[in-house]
Image (cartoon, rainbow, N blue to C red):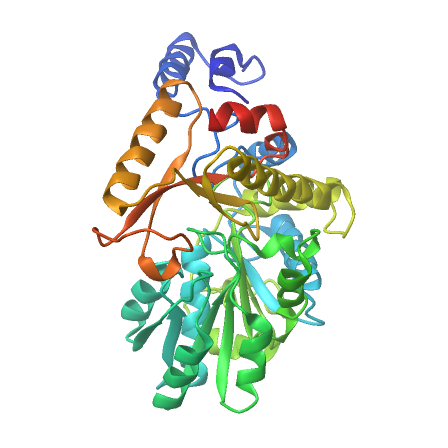
Length: 418
């Protein structure tokens, strides 16, 4: 829903007095100070509005205000959460998994690394230099050693550097990023699995951004990695990104349900309404909004996680949008990096990185004044495919995240690039 419609919302069914309505009017005014996240011309960060059905289901559930930490606090919504987590596991390819929803990818990744440490107390976390900063931060929180693995010119994990790293530590947890937040690249899971055959290490997939593309029409070389997701020990995915959900809604999935034993705890007020393992026993978080599971469940009833279904088609539109913008940029004289997912990176051509960075900043500001909102990204020499002279440590390029189906529009690409 666009911001200009906020004031027109009707709350006639709620017991609101005039003072309450005045507060909501004031809030609607304050919320005007925002970017138009729901509009086609917003193609900057990884933000898009939740589906109306998800919003309605979330709002409906808040009247009950369930807490999915225990069955006493969220009886119905805990059952819904178990259903959606099972469906996410099936999408990935897990025959039987253990998991739950989280407040987002950061908490989900923390849990994945925590479980890895519980399995092997002296584990070292290995993640590419293009991975999310969450992993180094959470490794520090957990007291786990962390090593950054170099990336290649494609922006994905360098396999030779990875092999050197796994050979130099006693036990490794390799974080495979499937959808880096900068370039939108996919680490070579297939080759990492081959490396695992000769080196004993655990694999965690951070698919917070790219996980749903498992059921989309990816290019063959990228698709082969997604088809092997079920081989990983754990997977993180964020429904509040491509899954059409309100913030925050992440998810962690563990391939081995027996790892639930690591969560065992005792509390003088633990609820005993059921002999079954409840969600509060398999999460590091305590209070969690049951409304998040209700919203995701409702959305997945309308959009099942099926290859070729309506939800899959929405993802395909975003893929086509990124490929189309990439080709359009190249035809109009820009340098552009071929996208794997729905993130398109392009730059004004030039000789010196300092000059190109300035031109790209000017372009970014000009488009913002025209009402088209993009983002900027800093890339280093090892990830730059263009013949430039490096008089600065980083090159500033233009980044466009094409998460909405309506971004697949040649007229929009032309407006964006001109």
